[in-house]
Length: 467
Ligand code: AMP
Ligand code: ZN
Image (tube, rainbow, N blue to C red):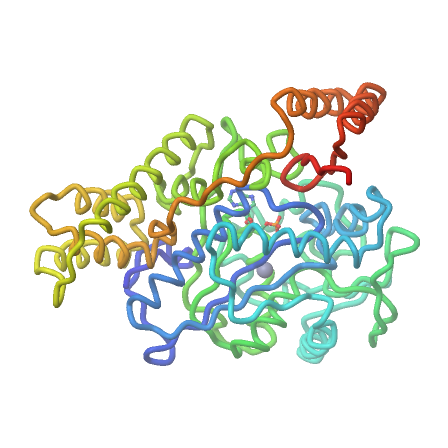
């Protein structure tokens, strides 16, 4: 198995620490809003990596965190806690916000056929582990307290910024934005906040440094080491995590243990909307439920992601998603007719096996999913193979691609309401988009007269019969 390691900027032969086993940590979502399909691209890449490692014979322990505290809106310890901000805007408690968006995230993961990690750990359940790690850093002389907060001093270690290859100039130039005057070095970062910038911070805990809450980066170090040990194989995330989040995770973990923390750093490239990174703050924010409400299946999006290499940027467009949908449907139809004609064989033929081998080789070469998908197509179209061969090989390949190609076409549920009723639902959606709430309410009333109540769900409005 070969993998690109961001630390060395090279494709390397993967050698696990313990033969036959892989320990893998992936930074999980910050649950203050729906994940957008860019975030989901990263989790699909990690799922494909895990499946490929398992196919290669490794036993994988996959750990993912849920960030439900401490992630500020700015990377340089500026801004406010994303969770608190979201709770205030929505008029709900932070705990409710966390629960709601964690559920929404797992619904998306299930729809995308992403295998649930072996350990899913919430930051708020691990505050004591974080405090213990900060204490260890304090004992090692890597911290200082200023303005009530505990900071990590990047000058206390010799190799800060090695993952991102930050130059001395980068380190000197400091934060792009307002520099926290408590910091000795602008790149120092908060381990523990007691001096909250906002009154009424809901999530706070006692600590040796006063009542407060953890900085964002410490959670990943504390939880990964708790579940995978102080030295593990693979750490994943999106490329935006390289310069700050992962850089700081490495600094504090290696400062605490005095040794190498992670052997392979794997990063997924961005999903682009137009020419820019899809992000929660920009306008072009698309969620999986919104695609589903437009008639796509979640797995059409998974297929679309597999058509690009995880280390290349991928441009989202509805045309490309249409093509993915057509392709996936085409594969499912072919498999359905092969299933009808397949006659049991003792084993698959050598030619089918050679397709399967080529597929594995593509995947084991730094996850060559686009190439693997084209091998699947070539194999399915190869008339020299029996129906049984093709069906078996396709199922084998789908074990990695995770497209649920063997699923029988599901009968769509009968839709409630006439086309006219649904035209009203559409009109209400538009009215709400244009903030014309008066019209939206009129339509709700009109639908009520027609015998329906409208319910807004994460995947769009639905009609329910009033009984
Ligand atoms: P967040 O919930 O904001 O912490 O992000 C979750 C994951 O999605 C992180 O690993 C990010 O690096 C990744 N990510 C954020 N934006 C994108 C994007 N446009 N394309 C791919 N991955 C992304
Ligand atoms: Zn992390």
